Image (tube, rainbow, N blue to C red; front, side, top):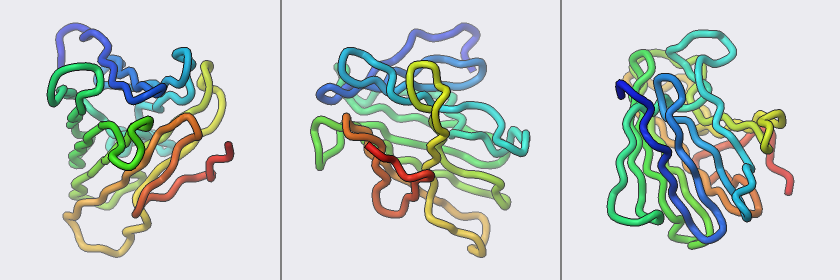
Length: 170
């Protein structure tokens, strides 16, 4: 955990950008569209149960750039409770104008919530939009779950193995 707030980190693809900023004890982020308009904000901290072991979004405490320049991928890692999180944020290979989040969680105990949560708009008052791995109830522990999604000017799009609730409407 940094002793001071590190500078924000930006990743870009076409008209899209994600700005990561230090928020208390973890990296939060904002998704920016054309003209740096804030489209979505990550929701950080304990989920609806108030249990810090199951945060609204992955608790990323380390963020590293994998190359040079604003379009170079980012690697994020962190932990909440006994769950370890990792993610790669990069230009989507299927759409160079979009950014793709590929997130994994290694779960050691039964989860209350594992996924990514966003509010919409500049004020963060809309939403929430929740992205999660398809239901994995009943699988043995420990296990790894994965969810992937694309961020573009047309919206948040869940990719294979991921659900979005409520569904995004452009």
